[in-house]
Image (cartoon, rainbow, N blue to C red; front, side, top):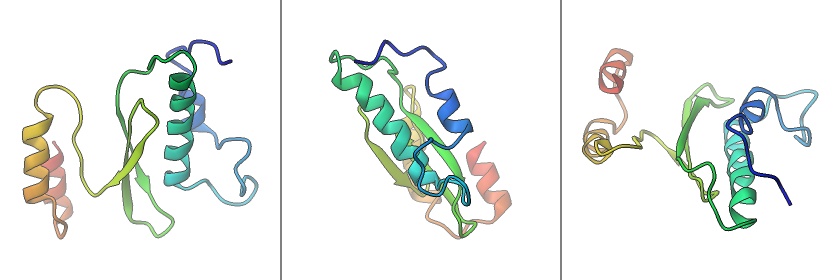
Amino acid sequence: SPSAPSPVTLRPITRHPPPHHPHQCEDAPSLEYIARFIARTQQRYTQRGGVRPFGVSSILAGFGKDGQPQIYQIDPSGNYFAWKANAIGGGNFKPMKEVLEKEGGGGLTEGDSLKLTV
């Protein structure tokens, strides 16, 4: 049975590949692999004791092996989702999500993307 997580429980996971990564010696783990690993870690704490000690969704962003940007939303329930654009948290995320759906359909220049992000 896992003990209650500390605020730093997930920090080492994002800095170093999990020890059982199949390509540990040659390739870096994919962003999807890290998102799944974090989601499973959070789910493990949720299943034992029926609480969600992490309590917040998070966004993991990076680049795939093809050099394309990738974004994953990781929920405390252990679910993770890939997105082209996303906003989470607070009371303002719904209007921002609507803006992203309208404006973030792809084809934006780097400057337009940065302006939309900030």
